[in-house]
Length: 211
Image (cartoon, rainbow, N blue to C red; front, top):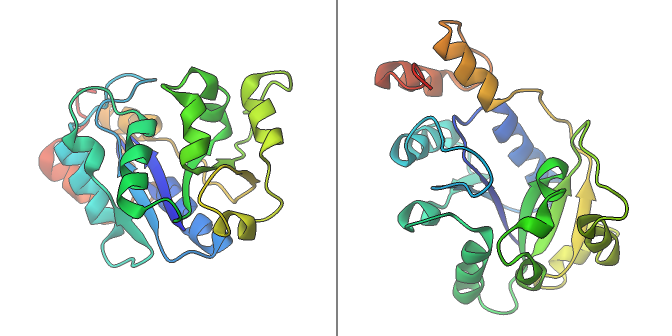
């Protein structure tokens, strides 16, 4: 199964990386593909440019065979829509390869406002990671979609190319990229919230000082 985990990774931190490893092990797959977003459709512009965020992400996963990076969204002009990435992947991987995307409950709560959202379940499975304090409205379209397509186990996702949803509870590290950026801007150290090599590169490049 080809699993993509998208985000701005602004900057990448241990919460992102640990979640990716947890998903790899829970879903019994060889790799999780991290997909950095170029122009996010639902949030402010990142504090670091795409080139630097990609470099930090590659630095963070160096030596970890279970994680890889797909930078296709950084090469597309305009807003980075998940559906465009999934269409490309489906064309490349063929009609039969299982593809899945990861999203937190906070983001999935607004799924019916995503660009061409109705097409996404036809292209891939949707794995929803439960986040504390983020619950779906029971009568909303995202909750209805989740229930109507709910898989009972990860094994079901491996058996078909897409169309299912799976809710997972994983150990989550309470780390936020926003908090890291704010700490750096205030002159505080974010060490141990992100890999040392990433922090060293942020300092070398002078990133986030004015974000």
